[in-house]
Length: 79
Image (tube, rainbow, N blue to C red; front, top):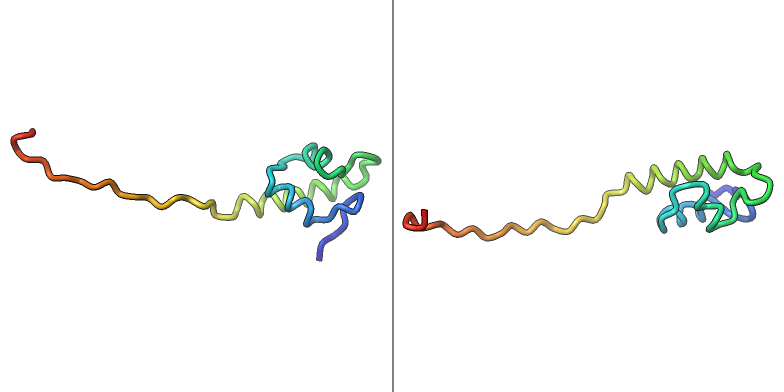
């Protein structure tokens, strides 16, 4: 269940905004219109933002596989 935060913006919208790069309440105001008018939803929006950021940063990052470089034995003459 997603809670409506402000101006029909839900937690789901905030989670999506974090996935797209939003990291501050100012970003949410710019992108979603949260806290743009009266500011009564600021605490709830901030709490949702913190939770979404914590969830987003705890997801394992996709890392490319490590490819080992081939090693070639050196001839004693090369040393």
